Structures are given as C-alpha cells and as structure tokens.
Length: 146
Image (cartoon, rainbow, N blue to C red; front, top):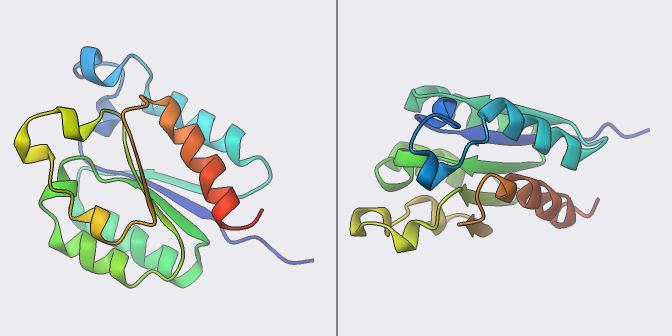
C-alpha cells in the first residue's frame, strides 16, 4: 500500500483574521472554517494546513513540501507581491502549485496586479471567496491524478 504524500495548504499574513478583517472583501468565513472545508474536500488525501504572518515560516513549509509533499496550494496574501524569497522556494518544488486568492486581485488597486507567485504557479484561483479553497483542493487532486 502506497502512502499518499500530503497536499500543503499555506496561508500568508493576516489570513488568521478571516471573518473579522474587511468582511466586505474577504467574507465572514474564518480560517478554521476554511481548514475544515479543505479537509472535507481532500477526503482521504492527507493535508498539511498552515498559516503564518512570518515569511520565513512559509518558506520553511515550502521546503517541507519540496521534501515530502504532493502539491502546494498557497494564498501568500501580501507576500504575493513582495516576496522573492517565497518565489525562489516555490521554484524548487517539482509538483503542482495552485495560487489562491479570496478576492479577485485584478479588480483591486494596481499594486495587487503583479503576482510574483503566478510566475511559477500551475494554476491561479481568484475571486471565488473562501469557497475557492475547496475548488483548489479538488483541482489539486485532479492534477495529482487522484
């Protein structure tokens, strides 16, 4: 029996405030509810779900995924537009990467339009609200052939 490698679901700064922070943009769903959605969508597929406001922690989780993950779903939040370090870490990952945003970053202010992560992402999901996470997990399972 083969053990499935986990899907890493990584969340960047301020996402721990989901449900409270700018609900007119990000909705009322909490990060705990997002995690539950992801685990339900994953079914038997193992998930490593993380959130940090610290860039280095996200990079460390990408390194863990490089060593033992099947795929990465990442909502880098503000690091999307600023972190060459996260980009460099993601470039080392050989599996599928889905970049995820709750809001449609292209309908927002111009400084949200240039994603560094998109340069290495297999796919991008944006503007579907918190429900986008469930879609991302389903898409990742399809990309992994499961």
